[in-house]
Image (cartoon, rainbow over all chains, first blue to last red; front, side, top):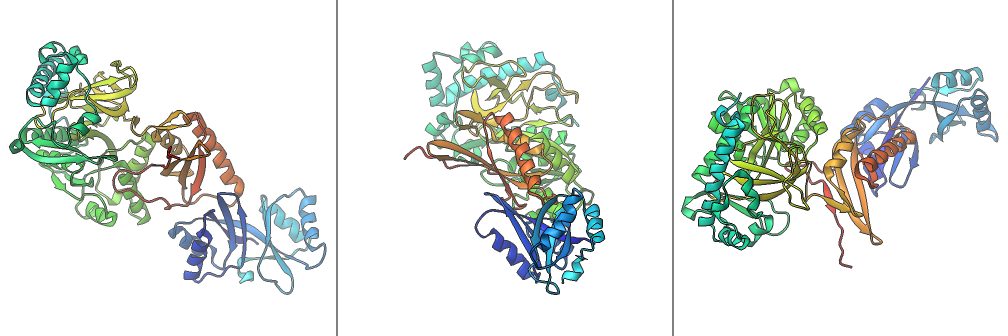
Length: 141
Length: 434
């Protein structure tokens, strides 16, 4: 069960992020989760939206370099050690995490974290065995 | 098809005999009709009679852009105004434009050389020639216009701009041959792709592109994008305009119409004439031009020439693609850099587009050098490492090509303005006045 995430290349210039949000607003796209990695001259923005493919198309038409990536969304207990228990499962089986971020809303009082890993299939089966709940794009709507 | 076999396929001896005869006449003509040139020869201690062989051309002084500026606007015209039937001017980036005048005979020569060039691209009296060079003082539009009409083709004087309309005409008028700058051809191809118009939806078979330096890689992109065979065209308004040289189907250099333009390649520093194959500045002498003849004019264009006969059957001397202009040459931290070198590097990266711009500036008494380049669409840019790795490889390739470092800034597709004429590739904001 994967989540489709959109990654967008953004120049690190004043107003560029606003250009991006303007396109989403104009097309009535809601942001479910977001995360920005930035350097001095550019950033990569990752967002979860309801219709990733459609949104990617809209972004490309508006001059954004956007790509759709598969990530995993997992449920994490909102308590000390909640995140650690999930990560421990992956680390113990030698799965590295490329990046991690949290969605903007709690789900059933629990935290939903988005994980990018190299080996999605393996990571998924490990988490499933460990009884960690995972979500599909529709679940987060 | 070869338009003028007698001239384009002449044996070397015949051509040299003709060139010498025309050179003698040209020097005498200019000496008699242009007081400035007479004084220049007198000052150099050379007389028209001293030209007894083609090699004697080396005795003559060079003509340079400065000579044109001193004689602005029409001081170098060799004919009275009543004989001049058309005026053009080059887009001088600094100072006054260079104004050139054509007599009826000159327009005939221009038509003839463009007819030769268009014929190299397969143009016949059945063809539709779509001219997207700017019409006006710039010579780009009128040259192919006259050449197409000489052949008897149907010429569409589109001029540049309004890309949507260009595409409509290309489709509806079933244009066969497109004439424009390479950067505009690339922009048209890009727009076609955006609109979902495939090369097969167009009727184009060839394009004649020039007026700015471009690379083989850019040619490949245009050929693929428009489904055509691309031909290079070279020229400059001071000499005639486009058509001084055009490349044939062999894509092995441009055939110079050497019965009208005598080429030499010189070392930029020593001014010595260089042998075939060596890169240097192109120097041209008009042979038979009436209104505005020029002898040993320094074009500022860097290229090489070869007298080897071409596989196409033509024997005319060929010039390489222009590698850069001595004018375009940037001196950054003491190193000579040509934008075309940067372009060559960019073209090797499928992750990048040919939409780029160089920014040169000065900070703390040091030159800054930066490249802004648009990323190709559809890249897997999710991970930072993808961009960082691309940057590392590009940095390395640029340093290897240029000998100096260049800061790279990646841009989203469509960020840089698209050019309808000559692309502006360099922004040099250096000022030495503190």
